[in-house]
Image (cartoon, rainbow, N blue to C red):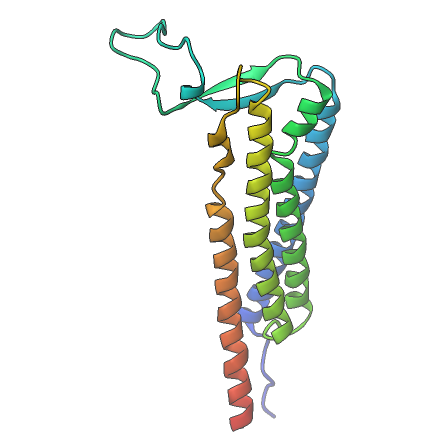
Length: 208
């Protein structure tokens, strides 16, 4: 009497890694949400500082910089960090527009990835539903990242109008979403790899 097939070590290892990844996604999700809550609490506290980096060209009086060797000066194309010591409630809330949208987006991406990973642990991951789920996460990452960058840039630009004597620092509107777009592209790439696996399985089933 022959022995039946034993357990597949590769499948066991895959399932373990999927479980670990699912746990990591949950940690990322709840960490991002905890940071959002912490930032809101800090923003509500009276007297909490608001920091902003301004273009040097929007400032004056930096030519007589001390404590440096002769011939050293402030980079005219650089930026200088400033702090509003006692900002109003409006400014503190406006300051939240910089980090909070990105953190909320990270939490949503992690939540969706966690749900997909749970499905992959519990059932066959090579399905069109899984491919569609990854494509949605990729789109949310890319488009949401662009939106978060725009909100952050506008928030910082509006803050600058309360810092400089006249006008505002328009350079703060240039917030690059390259990181978000790159992450979305990577997720979409995994989705296409999975889609290819689903297609090959369907072709094999037709042949058999």
